Image 1 (tube, one colour):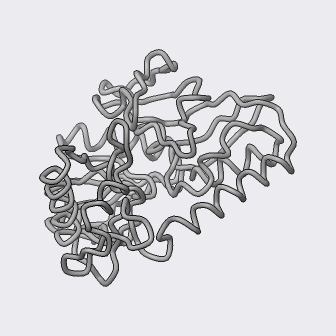
Image 2 (image 1 turned 90 degrees about the horizontal axis):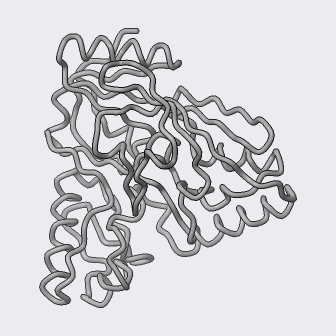
Length: 286
């Protein structure tokens, strides 16, 4: 598998901004993924993995290394009440597959624009649900390039984090135990979640979803709005007027516009409330 060289990362992220990567790999199977990782580790090339790029923002400097994009590795299988999905499977397709098999428990991820790998990595959640609620195990590639099975206990799940965010394990697939349900009811719940997203979130603009982590006892969007920052912009980046918790690419924003706005919002909210907002979006600098 030959990588792309010196290509822009913007088309591979939901924010549609960011510089170039030295290499971009697009494996279409677990074997190709493992081969790319092995090659990069042997040559001591810096690398990272990316799914749909829905929670990652690269600076305009880009990434001085290799980015492995997993979105083509997307098979999903169901055995009884257990669903197993490859790292690059979209959370939308996982929720849809579960519904098609009359399995309940993943409705809340419908509309989250990430993949299983990224979702487990950050314990993605919405509407009072998190992937850790039904997660069973993940097959991972360890730093020594051997496969290792991690159970829920091993994952150290927390709010928007897991053990994967603190080490060099690479998720290959993940399994979830679900409950039997009525397919029609499950799909109706999914449609309702999607309706709420369309009503409340600025889906018409590129973004990385909810930009800040939820602080204890309140909501980031409420604090930002209370500080009069709704609609505030730097360059082509803006705080959404529809939902202040979203920083959007409103008009061909550079990554640096977006990063500066995220930092500005965090500082202003801290000055006015004493609460420090932490980015939920992962910012990669150089």
